[in-house]
Amino acid sequence: MPTVPIFMPQLGESIAEATVVRIGIAPGDTVQTDQEVIEVETSKATMGVTTLCRGTVKEIHAKEGETYSVGTLLGLLDVTEEEIVRTGVDTVEAAADRRTAAAASPQEQEKNLHFALDDDSYEESSPEVVPSVKGLPVPAGVMGAHYISPRMRARMNEMGLREADISAVAGTGAGGRVMVEDLEKFLDYIDTWPSSNASPMRMAVADAMRRSWTRPLATVGLPVKLDRVLEHRRNQDPKPGLTLYVLRAFALALVEEPATAGFLIGQKVVHPRAFDIGVAVQVDDGVVVPVLRKVDQKSLSDLTKDYAEMVERGRRRRLSEDDLRGGIATVTNFGTFGLTSGTPIPLPNETLILGLGAGVKKPVWSSQVEAFVPMTEAELVLTFDHRVVDGGGAGVLLSRVAQLLQEPEKL
Image (spheres, rainbow, N blue to C red):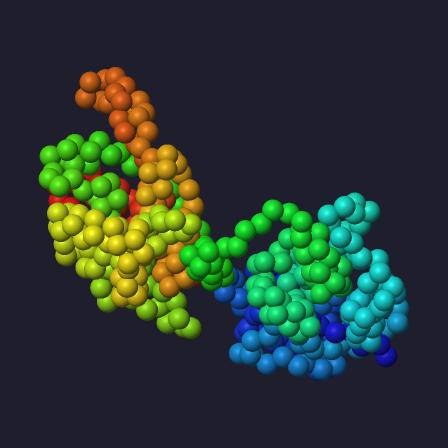
């Protein structure tokens, strides 16, 4: 009698595994098409694994409480030949043959040969869609271009290349895999293009951004009125920059919500032991982020002196390792370049980065004079590690920073 597999299905675009919480069948049980037989739990929800056809449970490989990756064999069904014909499902042998053929067949690989620079004859194929999750057809898992073979990785190591460096290369291997031949062809193609050697500073920034982008980052924004800050600043000597007002408000808001500045290590969220915050400083061919210590405990006057010294040493490349490490978050004022909005990226060891856009005069309705009055408004944006902070928490933190900026005399 033919045997049909029960696989762990693809339960969502970003979900690679699920934990079995309940098994509702036993060997010898008769099941119907689209019957929920195993209940699994992901980080998002509890879902049901369903059968693709009628049959009798032959074996159960899954265990309650165990976690399995997508595509893992959870059990087997004995089915009739008539049921195979009726539903068109693959038997265990057919499913294995299909995967082997897709991975190893020269004919199938030849169909996928293409190079995206000039060739427009490539026809993209879609994976077969089968109803793996109750009520939701989902695509069967396929090996994509994200896989790098040992031979390809060895060649990349010889050239000093990272995965992000080959993102522009179109692959000709199975499932779009980038082959060594693809890389060599691409490098030959761009060999005559103008180029220059990246500076050590640019390489350091590139490495930090690559590591940062391995996390799920999100950005929220909020307009903030700066008129009170600007008025307060006019009466100060020395005059703090707008960056320092934002820095101080950010630190005080984090004191109230320290968990938002934690960072995830394994299964622990490590919370800040001090509110040391970095400030992004533009230098030749890159950015440095000197860290100002205990921002929550210092006055604007003290921060102004510390900041001026740090910026001066940063632009002369005279910052020490201690000056650059230990920050729990960063503030960046991209408004100095006339930019009104942006999506800054936090450093790899930090969860948050707060950005300030350029101030713009806008008409705002005043209920006191019953007329529109000109006010200076700027965009505050907060980029955060979504593993640690959710959108609601980021919104609360950003709103609190904006509120504190309306009372600059208390900063």
